[in-house]
Length: 139
Image 1 (cartoon, rainbow, N blue to C red):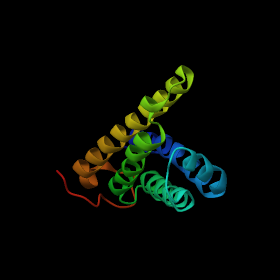
Image 2: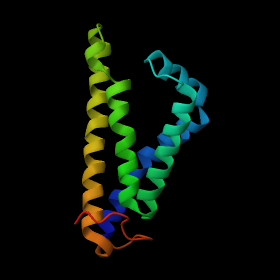
Image 3: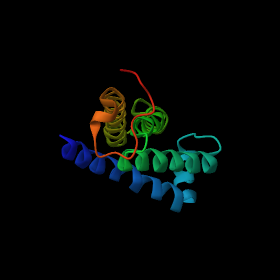
Image 4: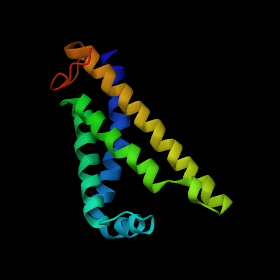
């Protein structure tokens, strides 16, 4: 089971680490998009969300308080889905469909992040192939 959880962590974290580098390396472009969606202070928001993605992704990947990392990812994903992918605000059918797909993806990943938080904190040190045990005890 340990190797399956490790492979899952690697695959899961890869998406967020790639996004983190995009946020941190293309801040201006991403901030312009965020501003077009109504995000205030878009440059600091993009930098902050990039750091959330980086810390959360590395935490899950390396198994360093991976439960905290999963929580950080959920903290990023839920507001992002609601604020950046508000498909219900779109009047164009194609734009609405694209935003709905992105909204559903973010919400599904948030759900997976919360499940990962519960799994890691419940497994305690029995999870294996991690650097630290969980930070939280929600057993």
